[in-house]
Each structure stands twice: as structure tokens, then as C-alpha cells.
Length: 434
Image: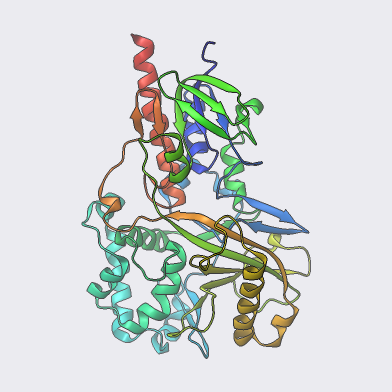
């Protein structure tokens, strides 16, 4: 059997789609094999009863350089969040804004008890520092934890607990802030330079746009890969069907990649649970992220967003969509691949109780729509993980890409896919010349 494709790509997440897009632009053929029933990996959206439910609360930072050069933002019809956050300190809501983007918020920032005057000056210094640094400089500095970095900058415990833990804890899915300071400063720079937004049609539109120009038969869904043979460049499905190509690209998460080859070591992953609720009335009126900034345990909510305040298209007429993110692992004894009904029921109850303490009796009318437990939501990239550059070429004819190889972000996934394609194309061109 002769190879039909230049490359077989295992997985249709952003990295795999980015790789395929670059291969297509160079005139190389490919086949994407996806185990699920739709493309996108973690960047997918479901459409239920007029609501758009992203598979986990996600946003696009418009300043991401790879995303800006790869995606058509106008066609995505991006809808931005307001900068800053609405923080509940256990008793009251306090609006913390970016006075550089919202000059009118300067006075409220100055009187906010979330941040002291010294903290506000440190925020201004941090903002100036990351904006004057290149991305290359940020990712080449010695790494340390976010928590250590914030302490080194001199931020108060109050500021760290009430803002940085829920805000960047929500981004890194780790409110202990044990993640990479490189990623923290990169994300801070992206937020300062651009907007935090969602496509009007859901985050899944990003994946769909990447694949929009592909040939109809270039993607096979519900096709789980059981094994690969890099020497033969052969991929075998669980069904027994096999394919040959000139090269193989593994574009899965690290655990799945390590199942296919011992050249990839699995990485621990951060988990999150996203719960969606429908409401007749929005609990807040602004398109702003709500954070749990209490200095003691007041409930499971880390962050909350009324997505229909950001993009009306996320819900049917007259309804509002509320997203709640809960961090952490399932209790011992619970299954790792699903939310057991008893645990989910208790989690919903606890979330609603906390939301009611924030917004009052209107929460009694919220209707639970769906919960998503994302076991591999983000690869753990705690220091010193990002200090080592990982190649996309694993062996002759075998490549790997994914955010766990670059950095844990939409931008990192897109960059990793592009780099895998560039390495593959270079090798195929050399092989053709021989």
C-alpha cells in the first residue's frame, strides 16, 4: 500500500488544525483523524435550546500575535469584555478597572479597598514593564511561580487574595498561583495590549474557521487512533483500518500522545468544572468578569460571567446565560471521566447558594443547563517547565504539537501547530530532492 497523504494528523484541536492549515497553504495533503464527533478539541461549543455553551469558560485575547495573524477577527465577530473585574469580597461588590483603558474609572480605583495606593502603583509599574518587554524577553527570563513573582513585586496579601488569585487563578486554573510567571507576564501583556473577547457564535467558531478551507474528505470524525508505526508511517484505528502517509503528526493532549509513543512524556493537567445556568434576569448589567475575592472559603465559585451581557447571541431572546467556573479535582472515590450525579447535584446546590448570597432571591429562578468537567483543561506548566524548548520533530517522519509543547494558551497551540508543519514541510522537501 502506497502513502496517500503527505501527513496524517492525529487530533483536531487548535494545534492540529493550525498544522493542517499551514500544510494546506504549502500545497501538501493531509488527513486529520479525530476520535470525537466534531473538531476543536477543547475549543468547542454546543448549541442547546438557543444557548451557546462553550466547553469550559474560555476567552480569546485579541493581542495574541499568532491568533491575530492566523484568524479573521472580523468574521469571528468578536465581542469584548470590559477590562478589569467585579470582585465580591465576601460582603460587597467592588469594581476594579484598568484606568489606562477606562480613564473614567480612575477615581473608583483610587478609593477601592481591594488595592492599596501602593498596590495601584505596583500595578502601573507591572503594566509598564510587560508592555515595554517583547514576548521573547518575557519567555527568556528565569522562571518562578506567579505567587513568588507577586511577592517580589511587593503586592499586598489583600491584593493577591482578592484579585490575583481568582483572576489569574481562573486563567491558569490554579488559585494557588504555582504556575509560571512567564505565562503570567505574557498574559498580562496581551490583556494590556488588546481585548478579552469571545466570538459571537461561540469559541467553537475559532476551530471551525481554521478548518473552513479544508477539503471535505480531509477530516475523519469518530476515528480513534489505536497505534502508530513511525517506521512505516502507518496509523491504525481502533476499528482496525490503517492509513499510510509520508509523515505522522500527533496533535493530542500529552496523555494521549504518550499512549501513542514513548517519545512523549505525559504532563499533569489542571482540571476545571464549568456550570451553565439560564436566567430571565441578568444578575449584573455589565459585560465584566465576576470574581470570588473573599479571603475565606465562601463557596466553590472562582469566577462567573453573564455571557449574554458580552454577546447577546449566547442566549435566546429574553434569556440570559450565566457561566460559573469551579477549580480543582473531584473528591476521592469519584470517577475521573464524568461528574457523578450525586457530586454534580451537590456542586450545583453549593454554587447556587453562593450565587444567592451575592445576588439575592433572583438566583432561585436560575435553571441549570449543563455542566462540563474538563479533566485536561490545561497542562501543568509550573516552573521550570517553560525553561526548556521542546522540539516538534520526535523522530524521522514523526512530529508532535500542542499547547503542552509550547505554552498553555490558544496562542501557544497555534504556534506549536505551525512549527510542526514547518518542520515537516522542510523534511519532506529535503526527502523529495534526494
